[in-house]
Figure 1 (cartoon, one colour):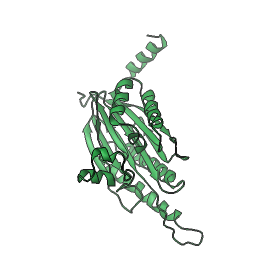
Figure 2: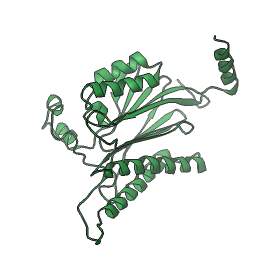
Figure 3: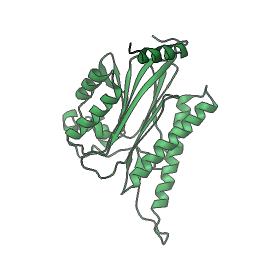
Figure 4: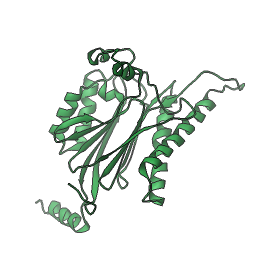
Length: 276
């Protein structure tokens, strides 16, 4: 297990694709390798509105969390993340209000919003936050585990025993979120913190992946291709598209590894140079 003197880092790979049905990709992703920060957003709304919402979410949250961590390295991560998500929510809500005004200034009932899934690693701790039905998974010791709980009508029905897991696969309520950025003036993100372990693999994804690809198949891909994260990311997107690609599909993969020292980086460089 890592200790306080054992710096950890994330190896990151990401892919996003419009899918087989949609004409516009309304997903947005952002990563900051140095700050071990990953953000994925899935937009919703009328034509282009979802694209605007997800881009606002991914960009503003990444910028706000990054600024906070750079200015205050010892900042409370959960608090920083929560405040950044609230700020993004206000930005999207206001933009939605602006888009709803026509040339005469009357209000049209147009709403736009976005989900968000976020991961930030600091020391040997991982902070996970989400709003909506974008997910965060973790592969540890070969086993895939869902780290988030969807904010959706379908999930509430499952929790209440009204819908079985089998029926949920074909439910018409799959895409009805109960919480999202921009839908109301304020929002609360679900936030958790967990201890990281070397070789853990985290997966952030929009529902275009988990609606099209079973968790067992996601687990198989990650176990088979964990040595090549970019290939694993491409493979997950390809399977989602092969299975119908009914929505945009986005994935961010991050593998926890030991942070190399300067001397190790030089040694690794010369090893590659000499073909060792």
